[in-house]
Length: 108
Image 1 (cartoon, rainbow, N blue to C red):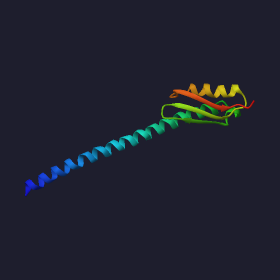
Image 2 (cartoon, rainbow, N blue to C red):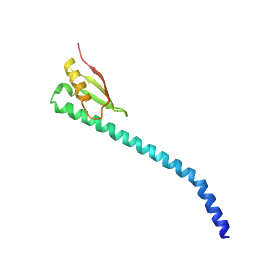
Image 3 (cartoon, rainbow, N blue to C red):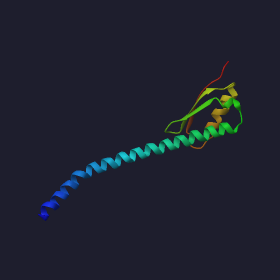
Image 4 (spheres, rainbow, N blue to C red):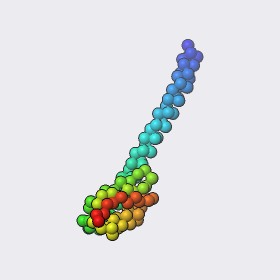
């Protein structure tokens, strides 16, 4: 009887092991996604804070988005080309930013 119980336990353990490993892999993937989201949010917040620190109302209408690779996307409206360039320069100088795509519209 003991041998049968031990054999059953080993068989069930062997059957459960692949499921447990797959679940751990999925959880690691979710944790990685959460870490990436936090990193992206931190970069976006840093860029927005630097834009706000300039006390320029001209930079208030600019949206900032960051992807998982540290690429910042600027969009919105700026009154002048200089204001648009300043926003891009501020974003490029922010820690964690790998590149900047400036899609800010300047009226002519």
